[in-house]
Image (cartoon, rainbow, N blue to C red; front, side, top):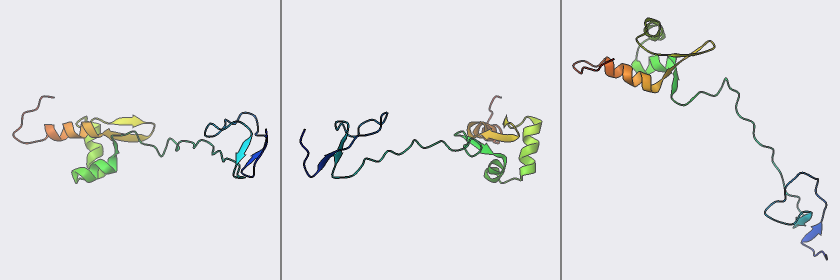
Length: 109
């Protein structure tokens, strides 16, 4: 195969797939294609499942203290999830709790 100014044959390391369907070993415009490694996921401690709120976030939404929210969880009024030492409240459970606490609207438990 004969090379032009824009195409130069350069051997690529084994195991790297060709980019954009070009034949293996062809370099276009004198630049080597860059291969970025896959990005690692965030640490599990920083990731929160969607729809789970921390106790301070629940307290802020209800405009009560953190201690009051913890009392409601301990009394069984507000369902919570424990993951190790972390306590999380589902956003759906919070909405059900608020519906149960509404005056004049009978909601079965």
